[in-house]
Length: 545
Image (cartoon, rainbow, N blue to C red; front, top):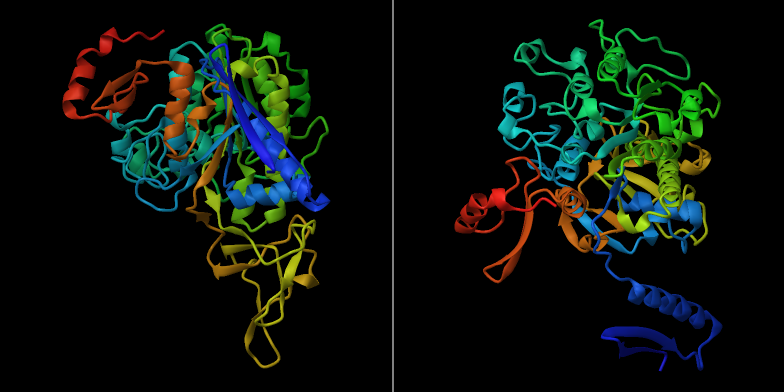
């Protein structure tokens, strides 16, 4: 007998212990038995935390599919190690398809994550009745989807988000905007035909509308969408392929004016120096815009006073500002450059950005160490990428190195490749016989940050993947993350765990139904029509406490 589980009852509680014998086990076997038994003991010791959460921190690794997590783990802590969030006691999978496509974009997935409703491809903060590019449909209030940050503001909680992308980019936009096209980050990308219908661009919605104007923390890039005719530098270029405002606006000044008129303690941050000098005890509203476009990649970032802060630094500062509210807070943290690197085939950069998010999560656990029993922390991705871990490389080998030679043509290939990608990744040459063949990657430094992994199919850029993504959770009610879920489930978990808005657990037809109505009409009961009618008639009597 190798191991045994002993259960006994003490004061009406079942006590579980694990013991083991190691007779006749070799050293090689004993290592793995000990490892498994220790993990079993840990699993048996986990007890559900059924408290309501005071705080919620939701980390989103944009494009951080499971292959990205695995590659980051191998690179950072080795095959047998674990990233910070992989130590969380609860996990599950999220189905990432959007309403009309098997493989989604980031705005539609963010609408599911933050608003609890699946949307059409490249639309954000609206439901599936809004077609892509249809401004008029997005103006219909019944088609709009509020986010978890709006729900939290309704309850007097502090709210905010930080991102390494532009603050009006695809993922954060779903927190505050209702847009029929994710490209409408500023006026320059909006068709004139849609402007005259009354639609605001995403940047204006952030600064002028609720909930964006009431966010306590906004940190990221995107100055070129907030201020017209900005000046670029070598270290802070303009994203010319994105929206560049030209209408004379200065929404940063508008933000400052709004806070001053309301008598609020607010500050604008532009670099590392500003962030280091901010006093969170004297600041309730922060607008940190650290770049014209996206922030610099972590490995390119300057730590100097005029440089851009890391995701860890922004997260730490955000928590310091938000945690003053006795009612609690919700913070959304996006590591957005994981996705940007993947789109260009830069696996090394994507994994570096994932590692930086791991640092931010670890920092968060340290800052909230005395509040972990009342803080729900969730880590997930919005979608995956087509990154693959290939071949049979030796354990301990550099994840960015060569896996082995192809048994077909004898040409080496790297451990990491993509299914799809642009011309830089479609690496083909003509051999001495005039036939095409794949280039030999061993002639290049495949460990370099700017090395572009080889791809199988030529497209304009590396595309997203439709595979499920993992979600990890720790803290109050984290056990609600436990199986394969719709991505839209996460918003409702947060609503149930923290917001407690018009919710009821009830039994009907031998099933329990959860009803959450966070001050909007789109949340529907899954029970039959007669049950729904009875619920709506009694809605006003539901206790919000």
